[in-house]
Length: 296
Image 1 (cartoon, rainbow, N blue to C red):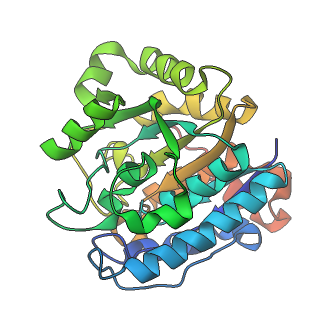
Image 2: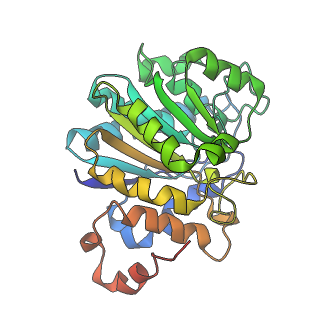
């Protein structure tokens, strides 16, 4: 299955606008990127509802089109509210609720009733599980985009009680950073992947870069101490390219404004290079390509 890159410059749902520059950092693949959103100032919900709904609709249509073509979309962005349009577009083509492996330092499961900040990037998982503001209903339809029983959140370590309560009530599997350290990444990953694929179900993987240790990925908007060592993630990320059940991939919350010495950008490019054949990169990018493979 060919992986096709899709870039999001969405920043309206976050706490700052730095994420809109994420696509500009992907020079080796720039001709193949499809950037759907212009830069906007972050705004609380529902002040930015019209912008968010429009952006999500555009990304929904693009993701669905790429999926219908037989490709596996890989979304690079962008604040994590981009997930609403992206995954709803993939689910529309699959025809059923998706399984999901959501790797994130945060639970992203507030609703407007529970969120103190009213930032949309803290709400996407709740929306995709069928909760939250009814304004999303025309885009998402009547069913949840993610099946709670087939959804696992991994590496969370910063959350509010209302999010935890909602997710446990729905039956989502929650693996904290502490539990991840106790059980080890391989065991947690195998169980999450088995759960997501159960019953021959299509599924996706959403990686928020703040799930990783800030030492590995400092270029995020809301860093949280601790986190996943990228060396543990690597073999699992690589194997997704051969999994026919995996219909989409997402890497969210890259904020170049906070990157140090290009560390996060280099990591991001390496993650992309695992799924986009290097023969599709320009010949003049050979030196750049050699720089994508540091040892972490």
